[in-house]
Each structure stands twice: as structure tokens, then as C-alpha cells.
Amino acid sequence: MTNRDSQTPVTAFVDALVDVGAQLATILDHMATYPSPDAEESPTDVLRRLLGEIFEEELRCQPGELEIAADVLSTAATAIEENLFLVPPPTADPPV
Image (cartoon, rainbow, N blue to C red; front, side):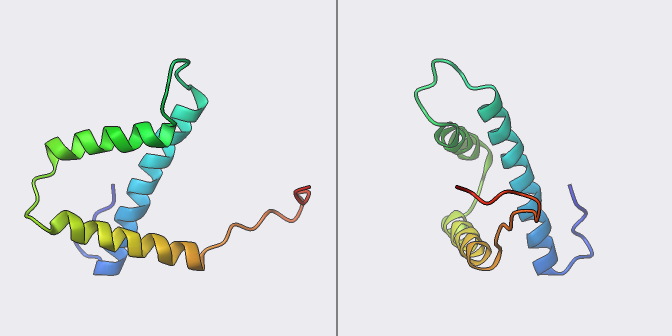
């Protein structure tokens, strides 16, 4: 994890977001690579359920803090969606 002591608030938020995103991407990649043959839920739904159980137990927040955090993350996700685009490498064949 990144040392956030001497960072601006935006830099600290970006670093935390990238750290969490990398963790979640690794977990989802693992779940997609090694699927459970009897799984009835998608990897994304399993991850949502597991994170809900973990956070219910681990996060001790004041009322409203998680709603604020969810709103900030949702705003960040919208900003990412609207401003970052995946571009295929120049050598890749275009999709058919």
C-alpha cells in the first residue's frame, strides 16, 4: 500500500482507489480463471456478497459515512467512465 502521509487529498484518494481496484481486479481474475463448477452466482455477485459480509463485520463507521463514501466512489466511477477510454493497440485487428 502507498504511504499517504505527505500526499494531497486527491493524490491520496487516487492511490487508495488504484490500490483497491488492483485488489479487486486480482480477485475477479482469479475467480474467472478458476471458476467453481457448482457456482450459481457470477464472480461479480460472489465478490459483492463476500465484501458485504466482510464490511458488515470490519467497518465501524458513523451513520452516514458509508453513504458518503459510496457517493464519492460513484462520482469517481462516473468520472472515470466519462474521461478514460480503452484504445486497442495499433497492431490489433479491429473487432468483426
